[in-house]
Image 1 (cartoon, one colour):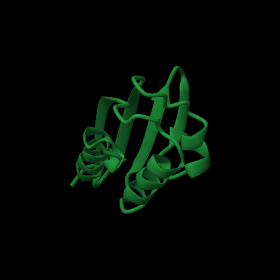
Image 2 (image 1 turned 120 degrees about the vertical axis):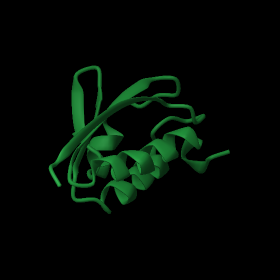
Image 3 (image 1 turned 90 degrees about the vertical axis):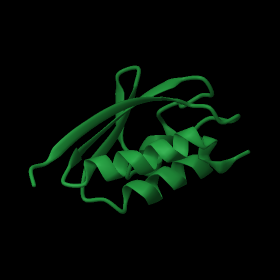
Image 4 (image 1 turned 60 degrees about the vertical axis):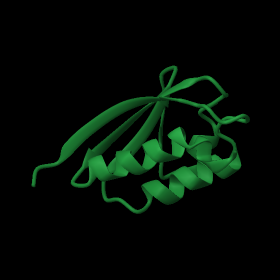
Length: 92
């Protein structure tokens, strides 16, 4: 199977944005996959496998993030990350 590239945009819906706990959930999810997964906002691009990178991306509530997954399991990785955003990182 050829590597796939999946790109999606997500709005940060949880009350406090991407702080330590949501960043940790993203790193945990991304770490399960062989694909490269990056998040980008305002020209800043960081790996979703780096908690320090995610903490610097300024994912404020209401901001839009572009996530790119590329690799053999990109679609599965994106589905799990999408679930985190849709469910507000399980903060409600």
